[in-house]
Amino acid sequence: MSSLFISSAQAADGGGLLSNPQLLQFAPMIFIFVVFYFLLIRPQQQRARKLRDEQGSLRRGDRIVTAGGIVGVVQATRDDSDEVDVEIAQGVRVKIVRSTITNITSREKPANDS
Image 1 (cartoon, rainbow, N blue to C red):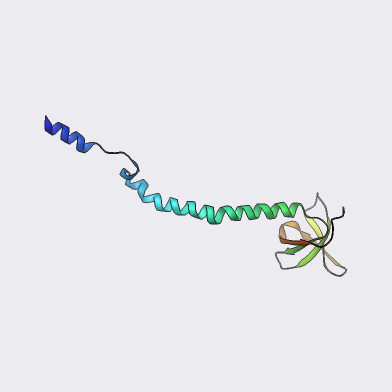
Image 2: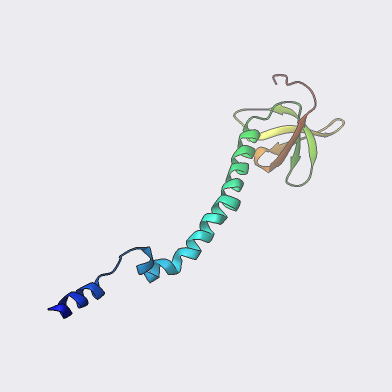
């Protein structure tokens, strides 16, 4: 009779996290992914969202930098268009696609409706 109790006691397991070796094997990879998410992925998504919002709210007088390194001042925007008129030198105006704008550095003068 005592052998019955001993064998059932030995067969009983805690059933916790440490008893599952497969899950324990993936724990470091899960931890690394969580760290990467909070240190790299999430901040990058927030920066991209902020830039998208800034590109959508461009106004006359905003100083911008494009992906090609062109620095200019916004002269005219249209809500229904993806293009922005930018002055890159005295009297030189070009049309730039909003998505190529990588940085909005400063506003030179107060915004006027255009």
